[in-house]
Length: 528
Image (cartoon, rainbow, N blue to C red; front, top):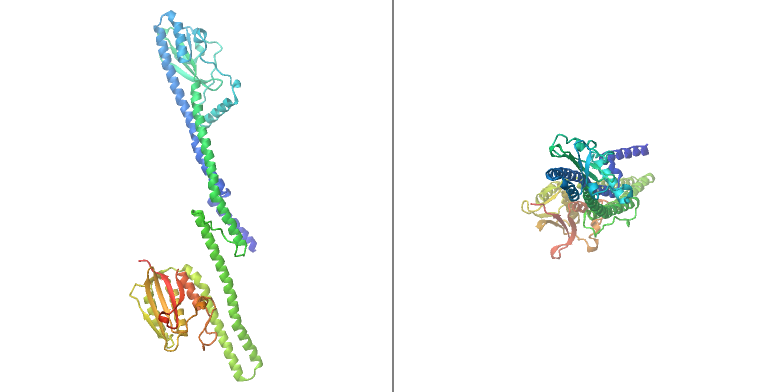
């Protein structure tokens, strides 16, 4: 059943993740970086659609210009003598780069500038142009369709060139205004058509021009925009790949290292620290490295602690088993009583070990959950000493405490746990002090720290043993003390609590060459 439950839980987690991240959860980080940057380039491509509006404005201006030009030509022709009409038509045709036609009142064509001189424009056959022009026309159509441009009709010369075949001339009958329109030549360049009635109903005039310059201007601007987009896209993609390389590859490297740490048991497997990186990736790598090292240290400590617990419990269990087995073979009441006393002592020793082991195993977890608050060390020690006096815990040993002024020695911490530290140190100092000896306690500020000294008059601790005494189950008791009375966890618990408060505990020689040990505790001073 357990594998099925695990599969269902994984499926549920995947569904929840999909709801949170959506489609992006299925894309790699590199792909997402590329997509975001390419989307920005796509916004720049919107300039291509602006050029379509720009072309429309140019066309409207050219249509208005054609109407004005046709009005000027009509006025000039009406004021000219008959012999001057043909030269004027040729001159205006060359100047305007357009074809001019005049129709009689009955609609027949009477004058055509293309018949008087060389044509000023010729329509180009798209089939005869290079492929680049075909590509440009395809792009024109694509953009026009995308922005829903109003369709422009194709231009075609009427089969019978008469006035009634031109809608622009039909629309001007009975009116003095000029009418213009735009259509497309076979090569999709604009053809401007404008018509106007001549004064005094003497006929009509038609202007047609192939405005190829509009297409050239728009395509030139579009080519410039496309070049900018191409350069920007290339730079963006290269920067995206560079960004992906500097972000994604280190993350993948960290992920692979984390997987090796999870799958492996060797202490040599570690998360790379990336010391050369000073950014968030470097901070992440060092944080993961420190975390994995801390976890490895915790695992090793747990394994060592379990081995030590097993060893320490085996001793009283072996003694208890030996005493119980001896009871079966001994008939002497006095010997039986001695064996029972041994068994009781072993049971008490096991009970003390279990209690101390339970306390030691909870210290780290409780400190992680504890909410630190300002603690006045002087007031706490004063209350602790008063409680010890009431319980007669000092066993004839005198304790001298130089109490600091109120709020002078304040630290941030858990009062119950700090009290346990000083209680353990006092128990240790009392047990090593001679009858009528003196234990001195001093708490003073030292810069940003509060320093507490607990000094006794016992035999002291040799320099080579000053770290060993803080190890779990290390026990070096005074001569004459009953074996098994202490578990050897008191000083180990004290160090764990002090380090959990970002402090330090160590053993020093007493001032002035006095005999005994001096335990020094340094804790960060409370702010304010």
